[in-house]
Amino acid sequence: MLSSVFHWVGYGLCHQLPARSLFAGGFQLPVCARDTGIYAGFVLSLIVITLVERGRKPSELSRPWLVAVGAIIFGTMVVDGVSSYAGWRETTNDLRLLTGLLAGYAMTLAVVPMLNGQLWTSVSRNRLLDGWRGAAWLVSIPVSFVLLRWLLPLSGVAYPVLLTLAIIATYAAVSLIFVTFVPALEHKMTSLRTGPIQLTLALMLVAAELLLASGIRIVAERFAAGS
Image (cartoon, rainbow, N blue to C red; front, top):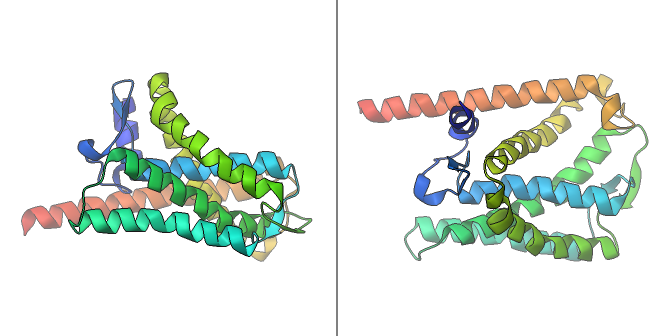
């Protein structure tokens, strides 16, 4: 039962090759090592940002130096993926996980200001991760890698369950931005508890996105098998 849930959540999002995936508690994680890093990194970064910002809800991009760092660390995943797929070099699951984690962290530098700018009734003009907060965010990256690579695998089935939730949370965060493009739903929330309509619509979008992605993969595989 659980194996089927994990499989279908990641089915349309990832190739799910066992050799390129991590395992915990006898279960293959829903997505490959690189995608595990992306989704888990995105959510872990959101948690760190929530802790260090302490309700500031910044809607401005980070300082240029941190934006540049974000672009560089996102680029590590691109370089690792392109160079390994092109056959120029070999990569490993540890490197896939690490570069995916870096990309997931980098994505929040763009997503969080957009979310804050769309969701809240009172919009802050603070810069994201200003001052010491940027350094704390960077320090959390190796801690997150240790968590994903060595600690969470010890939790057994909890690891794929948490990753499944991280996948949903990642898509929900991005979907919330699109939901709040509707004028009637923009700038209406003071906290997540005050936005049941926005959250429900975002989760419905996530379900539709996952179903569509799975449907596309099914059609593509049948077409490939018949050709």
